[in-house]
Image (cartoon, rainbow, N blue to C red; front, side, top):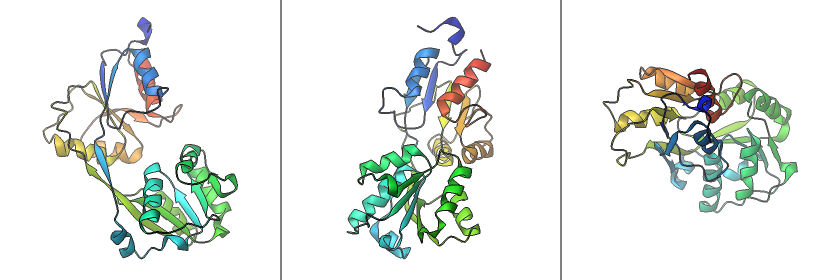
Length: 255
């Protein structure tokens, strides 16, 4: 049972603009129980994969790259989907570079996991840059990415004279939020600029008023501020990397 000190002030209903976690041990559920809040999960964006024709227009032969960089599970899913659709057999010698261990372990969904072929960082781009630099001699790198992509990876590769190619394998589109007849939530949580664009695409007259806005990452924060929103919960932050940690930090400092 939550103690009085764990109450989340006046915050009772939180909308998380992502699918509900499949893992029952997700920190979101611990947060909800500890602070006596109701969580609703509803993805604000949908993912559309690139077609074989669109990939071929990019003049990409997936077999030409002995190294592949993954910064998201979506990129990984669409990379292997297109390998299947294009009937490409990826060499067992291909090396995979993942920005975090969680993404690296996700490879097991698609291939036989071999530690000598999988390299990963701790989520820090500084460490990941150093990892890539250490393996620069691997050869030509492929960077599967989204149509609106963060610029860090290609900028780093370019400035350090890597041989590489960006492959746009998927894009995001606003989801139809017709089931959300209103936005009567105390807190709205966003994880990408696309999520915020979807908010205003579906609710063009949305005004913040007393709604608490939470954002993950600098690009999402910048987009929220571009829309004139006051962001009270920012992740990652000094002392925590995840959104649940940021929300808990907010609650403890706003009793």
